[in-house]
Length: 96
Image (cartoon, rainbow, N blue to C red):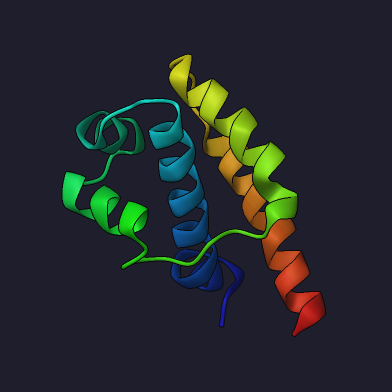
């Protein structure tokens, strides 16, 4: 499996779950979160309810907080997502 294929299937959903939960804890609505993360409100609802995606390891929550801060500020977080994805992917590879 290619690195990015693994990321799309296993890592990015975890990051999305964590970002959705972080933004929701800050008081943003499902529709606002959906716009920020460029996904449907239904997908956000599934992330928040635990029906879709797994939780991210707690060691990465500071990264999620920083990404959420940047997202709220209207910044592009693509570089931060790639960096976090690489960290998680490396951890998964080591523990596998």
